[in-house]
Length: 206
Ligand code: ATP
Ligand code: MG
Image 1 (cartoon, rainbow, N blue to C red):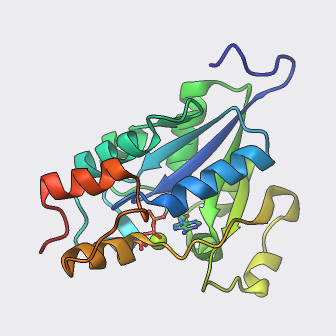
Image 2: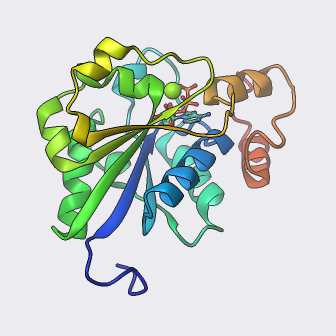
C-alpha cells in the first residue's frame, strides 16, 4: 500500500493479466494510458500460469515470462508484478486472479482489470462472468486490426465496462516471436532488456 496514494479514497489498482510471451510496448503503453486516465495508484502485471486458452500452443516457461515482465516494468514506480497466477496450480481463470489480489490487498481497493479489445470480446466465454463484474471494473483497450463486436458489448453491464482508445500500437507477442524465429530484429517493439533476455535465453528460436 503506497502511503503517497490519495487519502480518503480507496486505493485504485489496475490489473493487467497476460501471457507476456514476451511482454511488449503495446502492453506497457496500454497500462500507462489506463493508469493515467483512471488515476490509478498502481498497475500490477500478472503473468498467467499455464494458459488454458492457448494450451494447444507452446508457451515459454512461467519463470521466463515472469522475469521478462519484471525486467520490463522495473523502472516504473507505479508498475509491479504478481506471481499469484504462476504460483497457483492449474489453468488461470481471471476470477481467481481477481479474488487472490483482493484477498492480498484487502477490501478497500478498487480493481480495474485492463484488457485488450480482443480479449474483452471473449469475456462471455470466461468462467463466472457475473462474479467478474462484482470484483472489478473492466477497461477494454482498442487495438489496431481488432473489431469490437457490438452485440457482445451490449450484453455486458455498461457501468462495469469502459472502452478506451490507446495509441495505435500494432505490436503483438505473436509478431515478436515470429520475428525472433525469422532472425528479424525486435528492437523498439519491446524494451531493450527484453531483447537482451530473449537472446540470452535463446527463446523463440525453435
Ligand atoms: P499473443 O500474440 O501471444 O496473443 P498478445 O500480444 O496478445 O500475445 P497477451 O499476453 O496475450 O499478448 O496480452 C495480454 C493483454 O494485453 C490482453 O488483454 C491483450 O488484449 C492486451 N494487448 C496485447 N497487445 C496489445 C496492444 N498492442 N495494445 C493494447 N493491448 C494489447
Ligand atoms: Mg493475445
